[in-house]
Length: 315
Length: 305
Image (cartoon, rainbow over all chains, first blue to last red; front, side, top):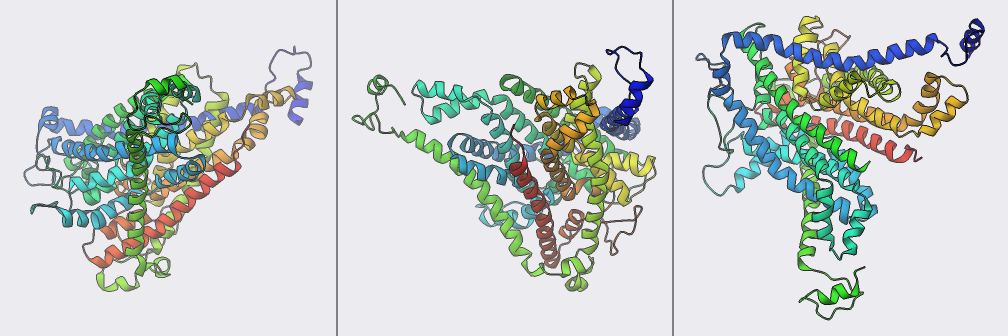
């Protein structure tokens, strides 16, 4: 307050309309801008960190070989740099995860939003959010030591799942994503105005018709955003696939009962060893990282767009 | 609820003479309801089943050895092994993350909500950038740490590097939660403050922020608990070794709970698996306790205007 009196005194002749300059206010604003700038620096840092070694990598490996090659063996004597095995493994795990997470997550969201009594909902929603915070290394552990032995025991045929395989990694990842999809979809279903539901009931709709033909379509952009976010998490998830997904990358593995390295698992595996800076192996980590960054960047862009649409409609 | 004419004209073979007041129950409807309920039960059942399994698996290791003894890579010494250095490392990292990440995150959010003119392209870019960062895989942040912070800036593979990387990783969580908390404070509070002659910063610091504290606290705790559980960026930062001493400074080598668990998992012997389960229970206890506090704070103290 002393500054304001002082300031007013020194500028006695100023008109009232003119804003008084206060040093504290300008300092604060500068500080806030600086803080906000950190996130920009982070993105720039990521791009620089990825770009430089990636360019170095593509000086020695042709982009055509990288994109179309079906063998990825940087650590072998016979080196090959085709990224398709890593991409296909990522794809297989992601598809399995979605096949599990989307129906169960959406079903849970519909039940919580449309059927559960308010008390039940109030109790269960926080628990769903709580479960979304379980560290992924835990899912990797249970996939390898609890789920896979069960799967191997129950498998009807002789050639059952391997010790590490894409199926079990996908299942564990699906279980991991369920709370995320359930929570975000439920939020968007809860944002659907009551009047839409009441209108449908007035036309003699049943609860199922209201849920599937009114609430889900009205909340669709939020639901799609949740699913895209789920895909993005599955593609970028590292610990589950590193622990339970396997290591093979010298050929494209489609059979989910076999193990194979995803993009993230390759990065984790190779960088937990000692690699010399500037070597092609070192640069290959960044090239795969750059590809991963581009894929998730595209997925995030879609998700952000969808969320914005759903906000614009009902808020 | 439904009009009488509609019910009577609609063919309903299962209950032709049902009274109007009686709820019609259609088999399809009931099946749908049960299916939705089953989804929820399956989701909860599987998750609680797995967590219980971990608890049983690690039961024999759930004693004071976990935090009084150091980790080992030798099967012969496993009986007297624990995860003390990892636990201390995690506490170090998380304190540093709190110091680095929370001020930056909260100040950024204040800028975006209270100061930024969001018709300007650079402010919109800032917003989009934060939303995008929230979805960048954590292992990419590890690469940022490896290429820039550890090597180009010369911080090396130290506890400081780990803390900076994890801070940047959870920064969007803090920013987004703080923005929502600030946005929930009604405009009338600000106007009343301005009307009494307060400056912008006085209004923000004495009116807006105090009202937003519960939301900010919730977001901050969730962010820290996420940082505790992250292993992927630390793997890229070369943290996978047996460290049998506690960190003693900012430039110390370190290990952390999730990393230590990963190291135990990669060992084939069953004794290591058991120890990993014990360490997981410890990690889960910390993370879930923090998340419970966060959710409790939000539900209990958040103001409804």
